[in-house]
Length: 277
Image (cartoon, rainbow, N blue to C red; front, side, top):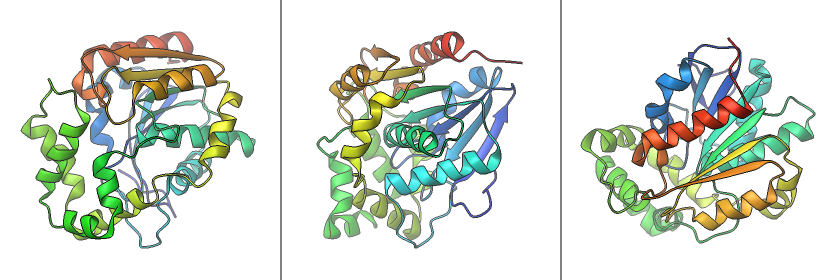
């Protein structure tokens, strides 16, 4: 694990191959989200698993710069400083929205854009804020959440995200709870929640049609966090996109439907961003 100079995010790199995949997790999560995909993808690609500022193993500085735009700027700085050029971005939920922002910002800076995007239940348009995030935004409720045990908080979040037929096991709950322990972790989550809607969201959405790289939109049919209509709207807005919807699946396809979701991602990458050994 490394924390690039001047950046709060934390990076775990593994795998092989000349082409690289950069993974961006969602709100309240960490790189733990991707564990079921790593062995197969890592046999063909160099993987960079980011813990975004405020989450997982990343730093939690008290600078209050925790909006999705702030987090996207950190990812841009990581990409430009590390010399990564031939890469795809893989983003889940909030991380998917950050991947869209990073793609637009790299184009604005005339830096190498991603060769492909994989967006899983990605935040992209104005919508109802999920209940737990909304609670964390409220001063009294957010303060109360600071004393809720980490496992309880993780279990609540997973149950709200999963399809009702899927139940997170104790090892999954513990995997997410690990990044939620400590007052600083809860403080950082409240900062992100309070700033979860980008101030420039209207400008961002208006520029989605300028994104030209091939994009996989992977959604759970019963996603209650980022509804399916978001994926359908993105599918119409993006110049070159494929929409795959998994039945009996909520907001976390990599966990609820690990084999089917990995097959969709592997097939897409093999066709649109094939590995180079």
